[in-house]
Length: 414
Image 1 (cartoon, rainbow, N blue to C red):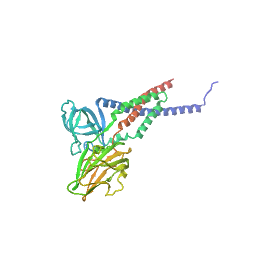
Image 2: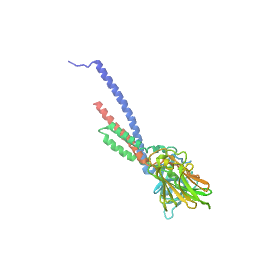
Image 3: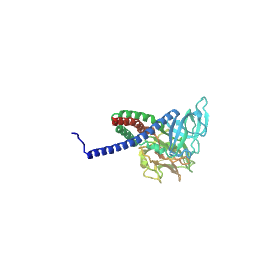
Image 4: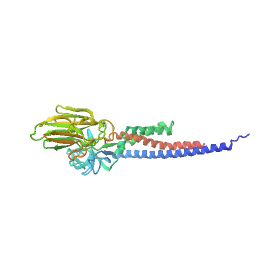
């Protein structure tokens, strides 16, 4: 006797199959769109990496305005590595400096180096600077600024956040495991890692850096000599120490003591992220070396607490010297933790013989902005490598999705 399923049960089963099949088809289309989009981005990254490797392209970031208004602070620029013979006066150029960050300024003169066919001697100046860089540069190659985009440096900096790096890694790995576990997961992970390695070099960014500057602030009795690398002070990253040096001396025949105090200028933000040492030397500092006997005035103190309580106006008196005996004060500031919104302007007051002369780390005398701030770009290449891993994963998934769909179609046909 033939067995027949009830009509209602058959209809219910058919309805569930249609509903389930329709949802599965919709889900598959959504997944395909996402995968192919990521795949396209991954392919673009791989092509860009190839172009960067063959033709020498990379990115640099501008954290301050030494090249404003041509390239304002917060810009990113595309640069290309070229031999020195291809540069000319007027080119905006990034030059590597051994032991220091690169410098990006405009060439003001260029001449062959005597005895060399490939090297050139160039002088440069930032568009916003009043004077040329202190020393000429000898180059065999350098990076030409091809194009720049204002306001996008922060986007690059966001990739420094280790939380974002971890999230991208988890998302990429989870997507692989969800889509292809267990048969395809190992293969997809290996190919994604290779794609990440290939994709990341094109996006690695370096930081534009200005040369050290020196200027004087002259009173009727007290004169201050300020020595700073203002771009370095504006481009700090965790663990890196920057130096701000002020020489205090006297003019004329006035006698008596000259008092020295330090403090924070108004408008400082999140200064507790910085730690400082303050040292005094009878002679000018040579890097971090005092030619004489140094005195420690402040040791490893958070910047927001280092100069409290105030004892003279907005500064705390830290030491004094006698007229005719100069003292060179060096502030060593280190960013203690990753913090995106640090702004701290140091102020030094020197007073004696009835006058007060002040210097601030924001470049008194028209030398630009040198606020201590966390705007550096160190580590971007490593961070974007993880982003490349996510994009490379999408490329692999898009490729394998077609094979998965074909397998499913064959299963239905059978």
